[in-house]
Amino acid sequence: MSSGLFGAIRTSASGLRGQRAKMDVVARNLANAETTRTADGTPYRRQRAIFEQVLGDKVSQNHMKLSSSGGGQGLSTTQSGHMSGLRSRVQNESSGGISSDVGLAEDASEFRVIYDPGHPDADGEGYVLMPNVNPISEMVDMISASRAYEANISSVQTAKEMFNQALKI
Image 1 (cartoon, helix red, strand yellow):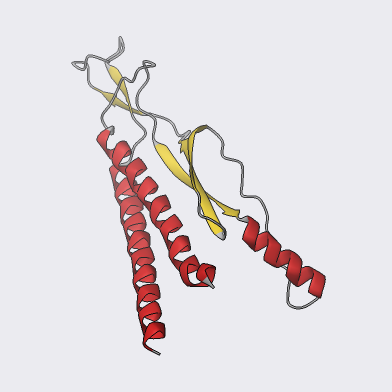
Image 2: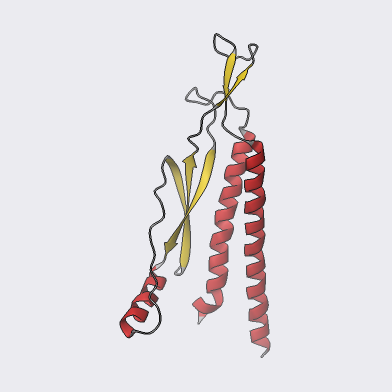
């Protein structure tokens, strides 16, 4: 019974952690939008947060019960696409139920080239390689992550209200 009561909150908490990680990546991209030289000597390369859903042991156990009893439709899942350019991985674990993996992948798009002969990183012809960060798309990603974060908070609030109503009965 406790997993039923707290399962919704655990699922929302996983979503909150994932969206927070996405907002951190967007903030890092915006902070480095003008960084022309990193430790490896190249401009900053935009990073993307990639979510991969991972089903916990509990869900697979329920699937096995449904399949063996013949009642209901079996759950089927497929692996998410391969995360190319994976730099680091943060796993948000919950005890049972669904958790999410948030991977960081570098954006492979081309760097912007601008003409600025006075820039310290300009080449012999006066061109500078700039990061492949587009502030407008980053702000769209930030708004999207912010709204998803708010939706998860609303879900937690609704679950708390339902628990309170159940206790009044």
